[in-house]
Structure formats: C-alpha cells, structure tokens
Length: 476
Image (cartoon, rainbow, N blue to C red):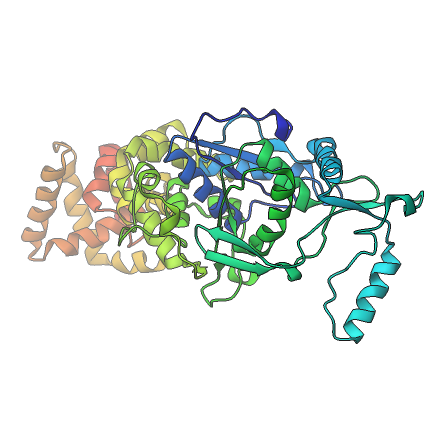
C-alpha cells in the first residue's frame, strides 16, 4: 500500500471520493453500501474512487482483515483507482501538519497529565459544568512550559457556531462552546484519527466525503483542522445507517453482516450492488436496474435521512430478477465461480455442458445461485435415482405401466420438444387420461422429485439414452 501523500492530483473539477474502512474484521454490509455510494458517485461523473485503509490502530488492525476488505470489494465489483493507501504509513506527514498548526498559532502545547484531566472532569461534573476539558496551557506563556512530554491541541473557537452544509443532512449547526480543544498529536508523538483523516483527505484531494452519519458529529471538529491549515473543505454527505427489519441498529441477531456471507449464500454481485444502492437511495419507483443506470442516476440528493431497513425478501426479489435477465453463458460462469469460491462440489465437463443447455429453464424460478443447482438436480443426480417421498407417490403401478407404454415410442422418435410432447399426449389419449397424468410420473422418473423444470425440457437436456434408462429404472 502507498501513502496518502503519493496520491495523483485530480484534474480541475474532477470528483474524488474515498472509502476508508478500518481493517479490524470482515467488510460489513454497511461499509459495503458506503463504498458503493462513493463508487457510484465518482464513476457516474468520470471521477476517481480511492481506497484508504485506516490502520492506525495497530493492535486491532490485521493483514488478514485488510485482505478481507480487498476481497469483499473485488467480489462486489467496486474497483478503486491507484494503490490502496495506508493511513499508518502517513504518520510522519500527520505529525508535520500538527507542528505546522502549532507554528501558525492554531494549536498549542498541552502538558496536562491524564490524572489532571480526570480531576478536572470530576470537578466539572460535581459542579454541573461542561466536562469538556479546558486546558490551562491554551494561552500560557511559552516561557512557563516545562521540560516534559506534551500533546498538541487545536485551538477551538470559544464562541459563535460552526456550520456544515451537509449534502444529505442539510444545514448542521454546532455551537462552538460544545467543541473541545481536541488533541491532534499525542504526547508520544502519534497522530490522532481526527487529525489523520483530515490530512489524508486533503493529500488525496478528496472532494466529497460520503460516509455514515455516525461520523456527523466529527465534521465540525474536523473543520477545525481544515480551517487551521487554510485548506478547502470537501463536500460532506453523511448517510443514515442500515437497520434490521425490526428498525433497530444492525447486529448479529439480524443475520448476515459481512459481504462474504451474502456471496456464500449465492447472491450475485450485480444483485447486491443493485440492492445496496436502493438501501437509503431512490430514483423514482425504480427497483431493478443495471450498473450503467445506477451510475447515471445516482446523486446525493436521492439519499434519504431516515435509516434504511435490511429486507431479505426484497433482496431475493431483486436477485431473482437479475438472475433471470442475465446472459445464460455469463450466468453459467457465475455459477461455476460460486461453486469454486464456496468450496462446493464442482461440475464435471459434461455437467457444465448440460447445465449450460438447461440454463434458460433453470433460472426462471431461481432467486440465488444455489437455486440453479437445486433446479439442475435432474442433471447432477446419478442412476439409480433416489426418489423422494412425494415423487414415489406418483409412481403407482398404473403410472409405471403408463411409462412402460411410453418408452417404446421414444426409441426412434425425433428428439425435439414438440415431437416429445406429442408422443406423451398420444399415449395419454390412448389411456383416456389427461397429459398431466403422464407428465407427473414422467417427472418423478426423470428427476426423483415433483418440483422440476418442464419434463420435456429435462428430456432434451438428458438426451434419449439417459431418458429411456431412467424410465426403465422407474418402471421396473
């Protein structure tokens, strides 16, 4: 990974967004939605989408978690520009900015100890005053500074207001007497997150900060650094968090939290992009759309202020729509990749060919990729078929006799759908029964189940020899 300062400057007027996760675990579904919004906004305007790993918490940040973020974004199809940036790698640059703020008089050295700060807050609480720490060193004469470790604090304004014109939340006003002189450089020389994020966004030329509204309170405090350095302030857009179906903050009790869990459940990446885009953003009544449409339509004005609710039923509907509209060959490759990524049994070359042939029939009722495997059971099963309980009830003695009558007609028949359906209809007519009375046991014989694609579509995929062999097995 590179450093923030190594980012390529944008061209005039170019939109630059960023996704800046902490590598402490999997890529959370909420983080994935934030990444998607940034990606859509940048891509729809010919801009840049950057990735920064905020790995300053060395105790909790791990290479495995960083790779999990990369893998999650790659699976979702959210490509980023240039190298991913390491926030920790920019620590020296962050410290330089803190020292520059000190030279400008926008920050000061604070020698207060943790015990002194705790005592101040206890006394303020007891007296009913604000517990925001007021350092005695803010306006101290440098001549009185001791030879001791010190933190660098920003000088927050004491009166007036700080106003943020948020692209989602509207005008957000914070009284300056509610802002503390936050630490930007600790006494051990390490920068704080509140400093690092501003320096990185500036050095990476970020024009739009699109992030969760749990960061909304940080915007006013981070403005202190922008103002201290006379840097342009990016457009802020704080998006509501995702809640569960019960309206409560998303947690483990609501089910899958990481994007890899959705991948493993078999939702195609294109469906996840579509669904996540609709979580908190809307474009009229459009529910199902392509990536190109999403990039063209997406705008910050379409983001609502209320928390979005995770809805698995709607996700399933959108996923099914994408599966059914996907090119058959592309869907076959998606299925093959899914089986490989999730360590499921791979298809043999013959099965790949047969599943590809059957794909138009398999996908018609599929909502997730495993549904395709379930619908393809008649292809993947080996003789003699295991007949389930419902299918066994369809294979009565009369039904077996009917199949025995049907089989000879198939020996030399032209293997075309209309011809096969005509033969079955003729046998049914001879027996004085409806076509369904033939199709029911035929389905059980060919698949061992009662819920399958059309019996005639299955016959076409299986071919003459396998079809007749299965009918003979069932009639025996």
